[in-house]
Length: 323
Image (cartoon, rainbow, N blue to C red; front, side):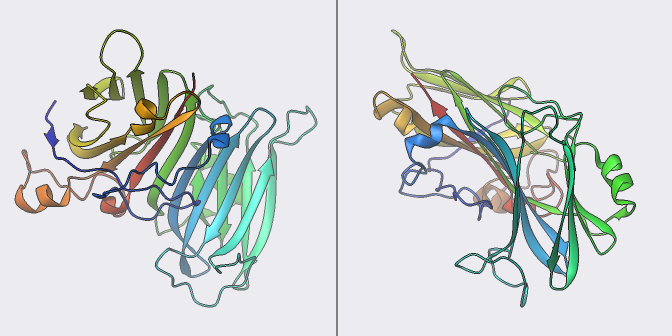
């Protein structure tokens, strides 16, 4: 496996529905401003896209939550981080960025309908949120369905965005076509809980809808602490002596595309007993210095690993380790 390494630390991951920017060099730990340990009892998965709604670019996020007592998903439409969007009408928050936010509680009761529709108005245009979870299949590692579902946004007789694998069913339900402007993936973030193994999934290249990502840690015992990071079952990063290398960065190759891998496991090593968090970032595309100086073997196109602007997309895995 071809790798390039450099010494730097990941930046903090934004804790809002959308992720602003990707991993960069920083003097601070990305876990320095992490959520409190109470978050360790809850798993979540978030995907954010830029989509054209009501004639303007909007930041749309889907957040799936699961705790001991409930499970839900929330769809939020915000202004993009750069501002823009004009005079929007809707349910704005204090900073004026949130336009629409709707939460669906997923009830275990047999009479709860797993299919629904909710309508909003944005700049005078109707926006329909439609979903169907009747055939959704969940895994034990994520609150988000693995397959068999759709959650879609419909505006101006177009399906502007679909979460899930049942896109054709969403188009049929909405009785309209997909938008001529493809939504652009911005980021994905998962928060998972485990003892040794931590699993997530993210779109890293254009060849697959999602790649399975697994982190294995070995921190106790007579051996020095170590960990490995695998993509689709293939180990791409292996780090030994974690007490000295608890933060780092490597560039690896996935499906012939460079992917930056960053990690910060400081709290796993030094925080002591209790739930502790580590953060992993996977970002398609080579680091800027390699992109500028090295055309890449085989003529890599560093900026075309996913649809949209690959240089802005990142996947964040927040791994909560329990005793």
